[in-house]
Image (cartoon, rainbow, N blue to C red; front, side, top):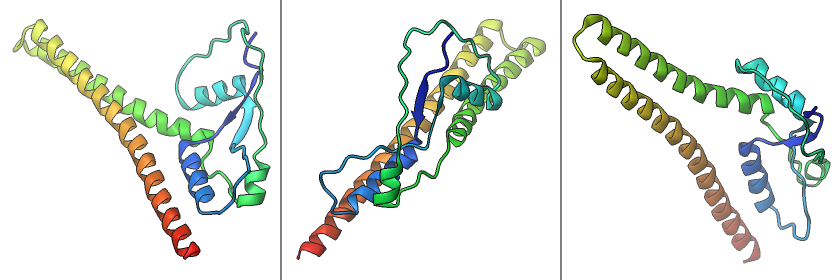
Length: 171
């Protein structure tokens, strides 16, 4: 049965913070592992299940490899400690999923109201439902893109700040 493999977790915001910290130094020739936590796939799945109402199905293991890394070097040399947990990432994901669920509930309520009132044909109500579900998906996609864009913007600003710091330092 699968789920015993070890995987390392790190929040995207922590990765951005790590790159910022790294760019603020003049350190070269070093490699770092950055990790918030290492845990079994089963434990990660159980954490997801404790936050999001879902079913876990463990199947036969097809890949027995485990990936556990140590981030002590980043802590020691860069004073970098991850700030966001796997639980926070799951909660953020759940919040986005709840937005989709809310939109689906609205679609369902509007469809039922249209059927009960007899003001619209079922075909029109279904069309409106599909439109609302599409809008909900677009909203979720936009939220993800905005999050990614914010990280990209943070990276660009950090690189510009570091370039200026290095320029000021070298002059």
